[in-house]
Image 1 (cartoon, each protein chain N blue to C red):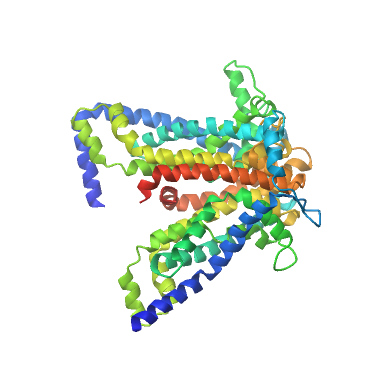
Image 2 (image 1 turned 30 degrees about the horizontal axis):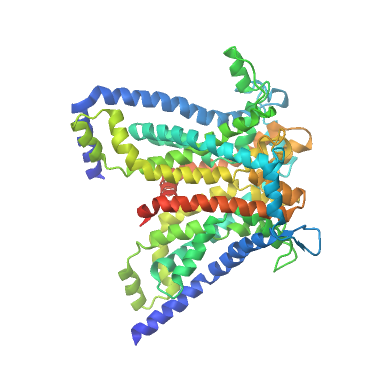
Length: 300
Length: 295
């Protein structure tokens, strides 16, 4: 009898404690998610009183935009793909190298960790503006090029170079995160394996090839997914490094999220922008499902 | 601790036996490369600080240190612009959200770790599944909800409007659930028999035992909010309600690009971050590994 009442009392208390979080998640997460789906079916204009239902028209517009090589939407998807294709591998290879070296050193290892971590905690906006100055025509980087008798570059002012110039900044800033995740992954590999390999006369690259690499595989998969999603959601660096947040020059750096913000809040095409976010959501969901498939065993 | 150091001692002795030269060489190369890369990590940040002391004429020049250093930029942004207000706004929003996240995330995490109740799995999965929805998908509905709120006339240009999306975080609930599972049931049951209330169990036993995790959660939440950009950009339009990252941008559009002011503002914004990072460095590194690997 006592047990039953206690169990009941605990159920009631559980729901009392969870009441505010349940309301919060229902109203600020689940409801807006459904709302975004609904908006994507309307020609939603925040200035209009009645919103016009258009069915899948917004999605058809996205599709026809994707077929038109000159549309900013197509450009946004292309650029986002380029950011991922170059950004993720470069970032992870560099981060893994750094993590392996950080794992090796003892003296001042904390200081070194902090160095690589600092850009990650700094505001993206601040970082972006510093690089805008460094990339200037008379700026520091061009001066360096001149000292090595190399031709100066337009960087952010050139439609061909701007995307890669921004990519460097994003890779530079986000690397600290990948380094820390790699370090945590390396820590979990039992040291005895390396000692055994050394006794068996394995060379350093052999222990990397046959011990570190396979045992670090889950961490690598995890980071590939996580960083891909981060690049899919890229907004602030492009906003801050292109003139007036335009994603220029000539849409050469624009991203999907930047298009979303521009369409929704500058052009009042909220229905179309919502449809774009639904597409983005679908891509992120697909990527997450792949991650879950690959790593489920580890989580269990 | 002693056991660990003994093991590493033995380990290094052994490695000395087998490949002393190899290890020394590898370490030296590591130090050289890490130092070079580490320099490229800090130089842009130092550049930011040094530019903030440069007069207007020197900004785009490639000299690292200012030729005629000046406090003028700081004096200007602190007295002639809304920057002090933006700073205050950023602090208010970050503190609001961090306090709320610390309380509600640990409470929810505690419930998921220590209570059995019908619907537990569904509620937990519903919370977690919200992580799959990118914030970018929610900003448009949030904006409409903020413009026509259920309570009050508008949430646009209010602290609540900036802070509401981040008042509770699913990652934090997940992290706290993991951590609170380590709170011993015997302790809770004993206290329960002694007549401690259910909230007392949470507040006086579970919370004190979970302070390291709550600390890590607070740090991340503070950092995330301090640097948040896309939502504050959208939900604020009045100058005096902007947060620091959003407001500092205005220096670029007003009269050309006043980069020296932006750099002064950015350097000031870095101060609280540096303090937090240097004091809590260990928690941050461990926290990222924890949330990153398990979330």
